[in-house]
Image 1 (cartoon, rainbow, N blue to C red):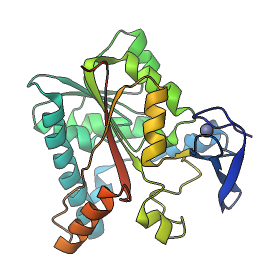
Image 2: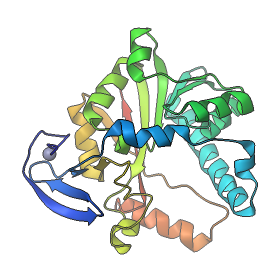
Image 3: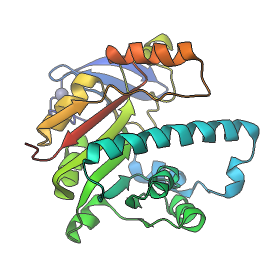
Amino acid sequence: MRTCPNCGNSRYKEKIREESFVIVSCNDCGLVYLLNPPDEKEIYEDYYKIEFTKDDYRSDSDVEMLNEIYEINNQRVKLIKTLAGKKDFTLLDIGCGSGLFLKSCANAGFNVSGIDVSKNALKFAKESFGLNVDNKKISNLAAEGKKFDIITMWHVLEHVLNPIEELKQIMEILNENGVLLIEVPNFNSIKFRLSGYKWKGGNHPLYHRSFFTSKTLKDTFRKSGFNNIEQLRFTYELGTKSFLYNLTKKIFNVFSADAFLDFAARKNSI
Ligand SMILES: [Zn+2]
């Protein structure tokens, strides 16, 4: 059985049981984590093999979803422009997948690159969008001496077995005053609670290893050595949704109860 990846404690309270998976909260630091993660290699073998083709985005429901993704990515691009504080900067997207986010960044004129575990997704990103993406790990980039001004990680940290180790590695490839931007599902979200923790965007124990709240994510950042950590009170304004929907999200966000948590952490900032 696994000890808490945030503080090493082995005392916990059981929170959720999902098939054979046991999700617990640490008695010491409060992090909610998967107690019995399956063998990574076995699980991710299939994950890596998912084929990406242009035909994946043909049905009407996919088009609607794609439009939402474009809207979200354009708002992320705007946010990054504000956070970067300068015109020329380098951006790395960790877990870039098929490259939709990087494509929006490239359209905005950013100098972008990405890494991912899925070779099929990377092939799609290269062939469809001509992006500079690689099947590399953070440690490979560190060994090559690569550094970036902005690093983004959308829905990645909840997948890794050791988030602190991951964030420490990221620190190595971040320029002085560089910014790390992270989004993860929110364990304290209304969506999660009202669904009886069945919300698939958050509760996916086959792939998710940590279930962060605003408090535990901040704690993980601190333990990784980041000292300027800001929770972004930022919700995506979706034109496809009603005014009431967008307003409700904003209100939930104030109480850290929106579906997702967004954080920016700076390295050695003044
Ligand atoms: Zn703990």
